[in-house]
Picture: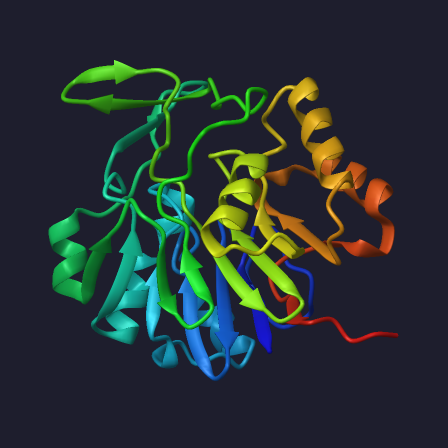
Length: 279
């Protein structure tokens, strides 16, 4: 069994005394083991997890999808609550990420030394790594799809030099293997959803995509790119697409119309137990 609970997201979907915040945090349980994937924006994951009956002290491993504030802003609060544990991330996690539309720093809001003193044992990896039986950190995802372009509203600084658009090489996903196929868990999918799916298949050797859960970053991309990704998804024989966060409301509506009962919106409080029970 694989169970994914949305602890933090932009919106709240259940009357559980939850708080919405711009960001994402997912609590993942597989065969009795627990992983936290991202920490949201402001630290509300602590109260939200409590309201949902989740014990963050049982989390064995933290995985960070990338170094944006809305996925790492709850890091300090979580670490002080949980204590020392391994934290998997790309070596470029602490890149100086910026938004260009309203120029501002949007990277990790804490320095590495502070997080390490709070309990983070960073494990940086560019390569795919199986961190628990049947659960893979993607490592750096090759950018091979011609129509998936990097968001030109984002840039970064490297040795004082502006790089635009930001390549966001630190974007990671999780690949979870269940008997029915592959469950892909996304942070923001800055690497491109199609690139991520292709890399997941190559990494695990499994072609069947059972579910895709998380932020797709389809909201900010051009319509032509959206349509190309929609066409790709229509060729996948998946059982569940649960999108949220950076997907955007208009794209969420379109996905719901395209995929019907196979689509689910995933606000804070949502829980997905896989494989799905047949009705």
